[in-house]
Image 1 (tube, protein in one colour):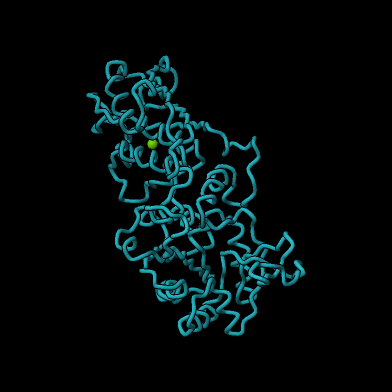
Image 2 (cartoon, rainbow, N blue to C red; image 1 turned 45 degrees about the vertical axis):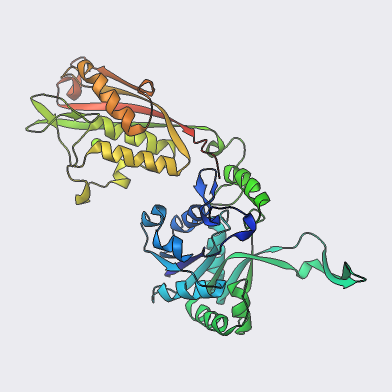
Length: 407
Ligand code: MG
């Protein structure tokens, strides 16, 4: 099943009263748009993403959208919500079986919720996330200049619509057509599918899947950002590591020494008779530290991000790879606190090169010199390392949650 996602992000967010467009306001270090984009970008059932932005933002595509591994299209949003969705729908792949639409202003929908809505739409044609009303519901009227209760509506039948909302391609095409002819603004796609005569299934939404509309929502959002698991949408228990301010990772690497190769350790070229063999520059120290910092945020390892089957990384500068890993860590909301590594090399002597290595790595990691420790060890002439056939490195990295303030 091919699934396309549309992110409706063309609104102006006037009710927030901010000079910065709502989409770009930051919550705990990531913009509202980026957070919503990251949900669909990281969802394994979604194959492509179309983002409808206000035309001024669409012209300068935010870099986070450009760095996706999925096909991403940016379209100019229209005057009304349904016009933006129509423009986005025109860019959706012809292969799409199901199209899921999500408001950028709901950055806390879980991936599990997307899965449930996509599955319900593929079965029933149309499905939306919706929350059963928990408060008693009143219909209002005006009497003597005051607003009064006209009647109480049985709440068991009342659901409050959220996004994601998903449709088969054919049903969304009808909804888009109905929306285009409609004189008013439709507040969601489901209402247009309903008008086209389709049954829309209700999928249990999430109370934390709030729509950010007012300044008060922004302060609630800061707390949600720190306490929600993006996969399940459930609250992270205080003991869960992802809520803790610190993360630790370990890395290990080994490369063989061969004649005719340069010896590069920690980004520093060291004069020596042999050098490290490998697809990239074989910088064993950079590789171990890269794995340590990726490991600290459970983002896999260097081989996953920079596979040696990919010619892009042939003879790659491993300091550049390390810098990329630092960016990945930052996107997860963490900064490198300190790094410690042991380089096991029988020869050459590492000590004379340690100051240059520390300086190079501190710069790449974005930390002070005092946060980088590099120790050389021999293997006491034991085993392959001791016979000078290879160099190995053990590294640990500590990360601290980024305290970057929201807007
Ligand atoms: Mg390596």
